[in-house]
Amino acid sequence: MASFSLIVLISVSFTVFLSVSAEDARVSTADLSSSGQAMKHRKNFTYVCDPERYKHLGLNVLKFSFCDSSLSYSTRAKDLVRRMTLAEKVRQLGNKAYGVPRLGLPKYEWWSEALHGVSKIGPGTFFDTVVPGATSFPTVVLLAATFNESLWKNIGQVVSTEARAMYNLGRAGLTFWSPNINVVCRELCPRTPGRGGSRIRVQPGRTPPQDCDSIQVMVDNHKYLQDTKEDAVARTLKAGEYAMLLSSVYIQGKVQVKDIDTSLEYLYIVLMRLGYFDGNRAYDKLGKDNICTDENIELAAQAAREGIVLLKNNKTLPLSTNKIRKIAVVGPHANATFPMIGNYAGIPCRYVTAIEGFSKYAKVIYRIGCDVTCKNESLIWPAVRAAKEADATIIVAGLDLSVEAEGLDREDLLLPGYQTQLIQQ
Ligand SMILES: *[C@@H]1O[C@H](CO)[C@@H](O)[C@H](O)[C@H]1NC(C)=O
Ligand SMILES: *[C@@H]1O[C@H](CO)[C@@H](O)[C@H](O)[C@H]1NC(C)=O
Ligand SMILES: *[C@@H]1O[C@H](CO)[C@@H](O)[C@H](O)[C@H]1NC(C)=O
Ligand SMILES: *[C@@H]1O[C@H](CO)[C@@H](O)[C@H](O)[C@H]1NC(C)=O
Ligand SMILES: *[C@@H]1O[C@H](CO)[C@@H](O)[C@H](O)[C@H]1NC(C)=O
Image 1 (cartoon, rainbow, N blue to C red):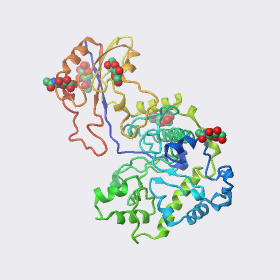
Image 2 (spheres, rainbow, N blue to C red):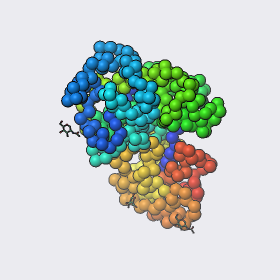
Image 3 (spheres, protein in one colour):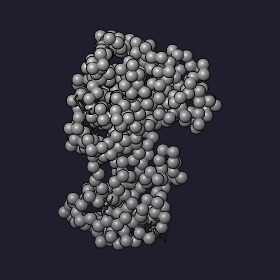
Image 4 (cartoon, helix red, strand yellow):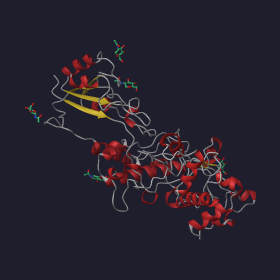
């Protein structure tokens, strides 16, 4: 007999996002190279200005002013950029910076991502047997629904700690991108006051692109200024931000060398702050033991608990394990794994499906009821029968990335197909 139903909607969407500044939360950066071969040797790479690095070649990197740690980062970055030819400079401006071997400057892949945990999107980060997974926090719509700034900060710190550990193991960069809420939204966007907390990075009126394909998006999608590719590149550089995708576009007189220099100097200052040039004793010992720890996984669970919105509870919850012995777990996401992690995801430490979770407390009868698209009602009746046999029914319904994703808008706000009928039955 089904006395009641709990409906859990899984919704995946990527828009809102929180970013924790490097300063506040040790979000880090750097990677010797993204090529497989160089990655193998990555383990022995220490830092750019390690005097041991080229000792065997008779090169002492400390003779370069950019390696003189008594100077300011700004002075050092200027020195480094000053030593590059124009051709060398241009090769440092894409998400893949090719490095300058004659200066001992390694390749660097700027493209790692960490939206709700270290992500596997982007060539700068990968998972393998050394780091099989990282803590996956709930998707950002759910994190936002916690309205808990200190929780966001804790999450930012865990993500950055795991990211730094992965960097130390040669599995990630030191700098991470995340998709951002549309920064043109102005009044609609929350601005979080105060320093020290995680901030939703919204700067009204100032919308410089710095993503891996933003220049392309400006030209091909926004078309706002009717720019050519070269115009867009020039505009981006002059906005004082990092032009991450310069590709091979040469700058047709629309940009002066000093604009490129300034952009590059910013980049190297960031890497210097993160220890790429001088090492970073405080974080160098982070490693495998700091990834997927019980505390980190518990923080993800806490975030899930705080973010879930209980719409109505007419004396139904909490369920009593004494009275509820048999639970029907129903719906397209009752046995979901991958759909739970949304987009911009990495590989989670582990999955716990709804079936597994509820099986700890009661006997579970599983009937899918509907797949996500749920084009017909044929599977609904077995689910209804299961519900009738059970003391309680949990329906895990909702979308997945085939219904709504970045670049894939939903056609309506309803549940797909016959999912609503499944719930109503
Ligand atoms: C690291 O250095 C050691 C000693 O110099 C060397 O034997 C080893 O092959 C290096 N490892 C990698 C991954 O390059
Ligand atoms: C917000 O998060 C903090 C830090 O994780 C936690 O201690 C606190 O209980 C949370 N606040 C609420 C209202 O849940
Ligand atoms: C709560 O449940 C009771 C008993 O089933 C019902 O009479 C009442 O109308 C419900 N209240 C609301 C607000 O749904
Ligand atoms: C859940 O899905 C997994 C595959 O992802 C499958 O191996 C398992 O049998 C499913 N569980 C049930 C109860 O159907
Ligand atoms: C109904 O949907 C199920 C599951 O997607 C499918 O196996 C079945 O062939 C469909 N039946 C009809 C009549 O379309």
